Amino acid sequence: MLKLKSCPRCKKGDIGLDRDHHGWYEYCLQCGYVRDLVSVVELGKEPAGGGEKKRGKAKDLR
Image (cartoon, rainbow, N blue to C red; front, side, top):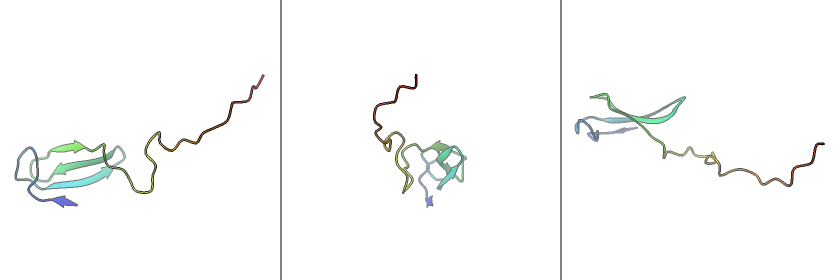
């Protein structure tokens, strides 16, 4: 995806959206601006910490 002429640093650059093994980020094609995105949620996946199942009491293993 590209957002044309929407770079916050150079004001004229085109912003691209991409993902690597660290997560999502946006980058400017003209000036090299890069910003990590933390608010992007992948479809079909639960947010971290939100999908934990409730468990009963732990058994005593003594």
